[in-house]
Image (tube, rainbow, N blue to C red; front, side, top):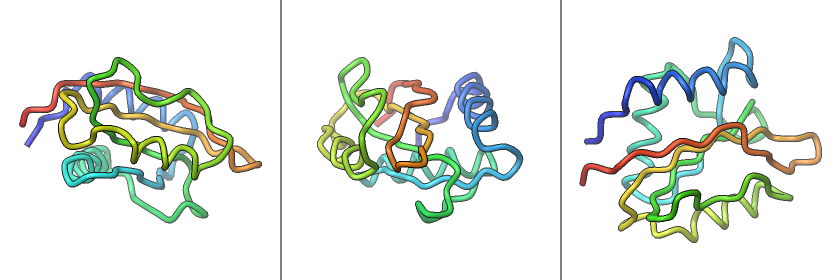
Length: 121
């Protein structure tokens, strides 16, 4: 399994903590087996909890891609974000891309942080 670099953990944790406050409950979008495993690993290592969208303070999205920045910085709806994430080459992409999105009051989403690193499989 891929080992998330410590510096990546610090960057992700600080970005979400600034948005979510002390309790970190995030919805997760991870459309493939490998991205779900990576999302679970991130949640466990940071002590975050996966929750339903209605209770989430943010959305953690994990995709695989060969692109530099495969997802957009904002979406008009959570459904658009989910559709775009599911449209990535999540099985064969050479890098994991980790995104944190803020959920706005109108249910649009804006990117708070993006980082990526090579997948080890």
